[in-house]
Image 1 (cartoon, one colour):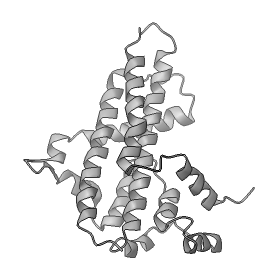
Image 2 (tube, one colour; image 1 turned 135 degrees about the vertical axis):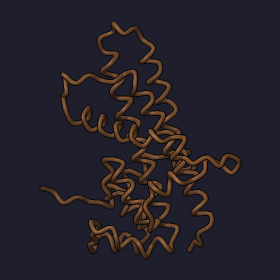
Image 3 (cartoon, helix red, strand yellow; image 1 turned 30 degrees about the horizontal axis):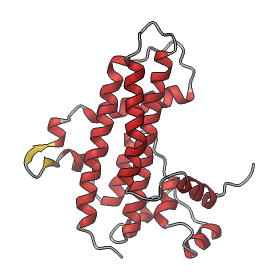
Length: 220
């Protein structure tokens, strides 16, 4: 079996994203047409045999967007420098070899690029684990305790209490329909738009939270 070339994988992945714009801009570039397409297909007559099958790809696509956003976020946080650099050693599954060290030294890739590329993001637990390491505090607990906005003191966890559970269900649907035939499994068309909405809420508030955190962190 050929050895994976992580540097080439990272460079190829980066080349497939727009170079201009923030991580959120890149996320929205794919999300907006994906949601519009999902809604257009859902509006079709239920008698159309392929309607439900193609709606499944809305769940798959939206989770890909969330995963892609989280990887960009992790890379940006690590590349911010301290105090996040000191916490990188807590990602125990990350290993370095001479090829990676040389690529980092030559600035072909960044440390954030490399780590975010290798970390598993298969569910909400993975996301929480990674962001918890970087912030040195349980991220989901921290997330729930944040206010909705400067002018609205209600807590995210109180107003959107069920959203995290729905995001987890979206991850499970993605895994099922991306990796299994699941021909007998009923697809919850009536609920899936709620799950997608919950994922949008999570990304939106996570972006706002990290924008505040990173703007108050010293950069190298």
